[in-house]
Length: 222
Image 1 (tube, rainbow, N blue to C red):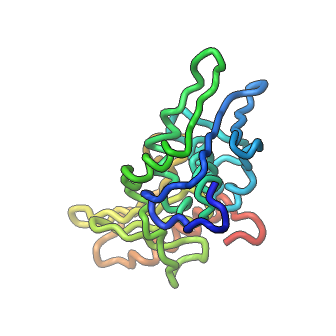
Image 2: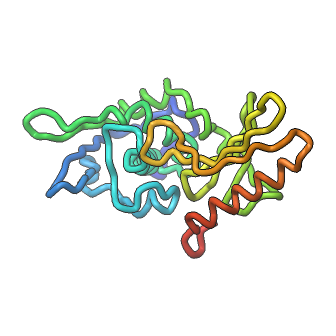
């Protein structure tokens, strides 16, 4: 792990001076991940403070909520940078965590730190979780932010895996509230077809509020 004397991680290409290795396996069916270099278990709670996809625990080997939680926890533990982990964990899940398998006689997977650095130097971000991390919007609840996209408007919930995507139809706007959840692709939760001359901003606000009603953020979380 980078010590306090190390240069903070600012880009995927930067690496750690010391050797770090993670190992994952199951004990009575429960996923366990260890930081072998520091002889400790990877913290679920620390990653849940950043993103809340899977309070029940980590997973790997597919693209879903458990692997998303693990991807965030690994980046957070390895780089010790909350913003970096938040911006890149979906892409890291898709490229690395979804491919982890417990094989061999030890029935576990190993992930050296240099492989994390190599992946972060080459991967491209998920189409929704872009590198800018999103910006607060004065018209949306505090736990929502606007995300930069060149082709469409996207809004991302900061505390849950919910998105609002605004698509341009032939004669109307299609506004979709969706969630990545346990699926490889976003699953629609609600949608509105809105005439071009209608108040699209109000529809976006309604869907954001509907999302908050579905899953309220924990007390003190915005």
